[in-house]
Image 1 (cartoon, one colour):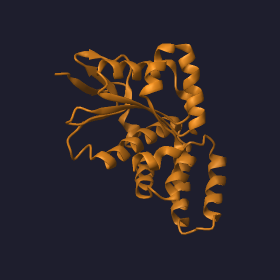
Image 2 (cartoon, rainbow, N blue to C red):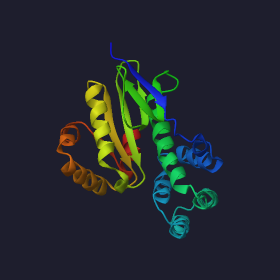
Image 3 (cartoon, rainbow, N blue to C red):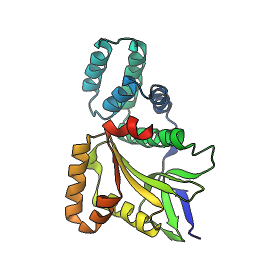
Length: 224
């Protein structure tokens, strides 16, 4: 029987995941899933410029449907606080990991079904620990699961990210399906991954047949 274990990364700074502004942003995002607010929040958090964020919020509020005006005011305060933090990139990365996990939990009832799961940690497969961490992991009692590598911007993916997903998929005997998740458009994700495959063509096998891409525009359809 194959053994798959997850342990949190010793480098994981739980303060980021417990940040009050981040937790409120995650809660709002989940509350407004399947609405234009959800998509707007993804667009806002993917933007690396507070001035542009404020312009986007003004635009979103001025759209024909202004029934969400109050929530955009709250988002403006939350995002201003997050973006004024010196560790804002860490908070943005944690946001994406938490949203991916919470949406997967909503879809598969990971916690209530007592599946194995974790955020930002290392996998050990049959006693052999993977060299690099994964951002999101879950394994159900039917012994099928997934691992996700999450990047706000697709340019953040590196060779070792794909290699790690590749090895996990192979060593788990196809039990753990690999995903890459980014708030970039699908075209940019695919272009970046293709650059990485040119650097190491051993990764093409997994990408060509098994790896799944979740881009900004895929979130609602996939997590439904």
